[in-house]
Amino acid sequence: MAVRLLRQSLSLVAHWEELVYAEARLSAHPLGKPFLPEVRGLLKSLEGIERAQRGSWREEILAQAAVDAVDDGLDDATRELSRQLTFIDGKKTARLKRYFVREPSRYIAFGLQTQAQALAGWPSSLKKEPEGVFKALGSTIAGLLKEAAVVLQQRIDAIGATADHRARDIVGFTDDHNRVRLSIHAALTVAGSKHGLARDFADRFFRRELRESAPDQPAAAPAEEPVKG
Image (cartoon, rainbow, N blue to C red; front, side, top):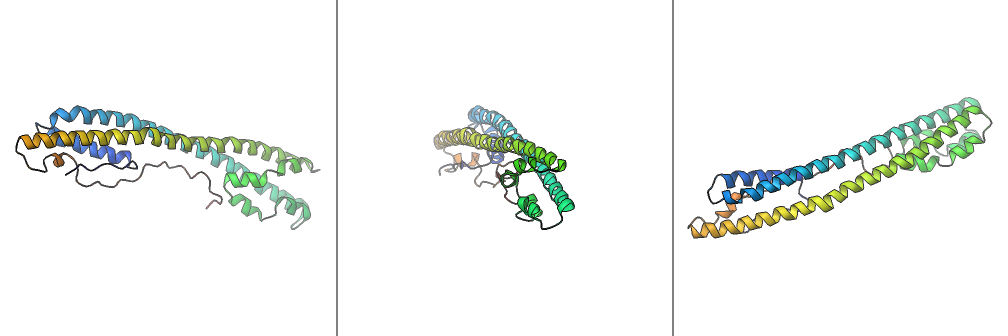
């Protein structure tokens, strides 16, 4: 019977479980002990890959935190603009409708990317308003929109780095792990046959069923959520 190959989408936790099981079974049999260095080498490599994965996840979470901070700032400025316009002009005036084609709550509900696009024309218009409070809000919103462009790009870069790590490092590790599994299984099949052992002797050093683990993923939000929920 051939050893089960591991999928490229397998989580690093599941890789670790497979290797720990194989290490324990190989350690317990004289014919298995010569193969321990290969398995332990993979375990060592896995530690570095896991550290790199946590590092890439950390960058995603930090990027999302920065996005959320700027988003909160734009939400506050949007509320304040709505409040000041209503206080000075009243409701349903032409100037209020100039800035709020939709209800203010709709703008606040947008994710940062969509909200930044919706507010892009506000600063230049607010600078031309006669009241100082609107000029000040225009400067605040302009600064936040510049920050939004930066943090949104940082989030794109962080998500891309995580994808690169999986494609370049995790997939490569899966290939190495499968190669070692096949090599050890083939060698133990020959050894078992020479010693007149059971036909499934080599199979016993590997788990027969894969326990599905949660997929590797960070705690950060998706690249863009058009509406905050």
